[in-house]
Image (cartoon, rainbow, N blue to C red; front, side):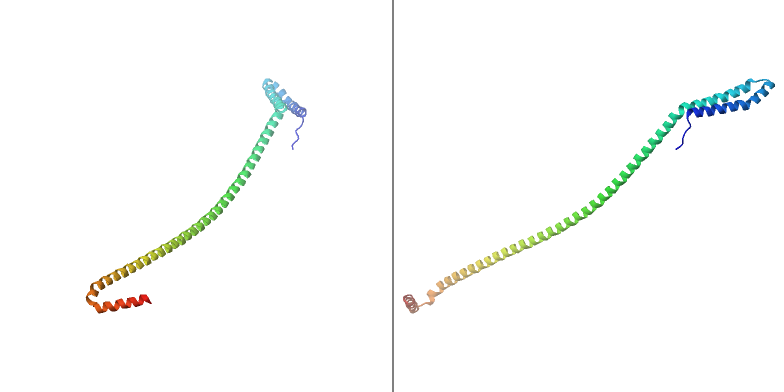
Length: 195
């Protein structure tokens, strides 16, 4: 850290330089008088003295506010840089978190997709098994209906054949059975019923 001299020491230093300049230009002043005019040299010296006084006043009164202003700006810029660096770190951390969440979401999506596909295949198999079971039941019911219809058709056919045979027998028997045959059948019937 740079240590600044006290304002009075700076003023004394400037005043010393001004006096030294006056002493240096004094021989020139004498030469100027002899050449015809002291006024141009005096004006030059006074300009330098005024400049030195102006510099001394600026150093005395403006040095502290100017130094404070520059220090304040430096602190403000350092604070803004620090804040921006913190924001950068926070944004970087947030970006990493978002990437991590994105990776987790992808993994979760894959797991959900796999589970849904598995459930779909399981449901598909259940539907196929249910359809097979229903088709088996329908086939069994159809077979039973067909068997019943066949049995009924056979019974109807048998009944019709028996009826036809009886009708046919009733038509032909009276012509072919004689009174002797009728007597034999009656005796046979009576012996079977008595026994």
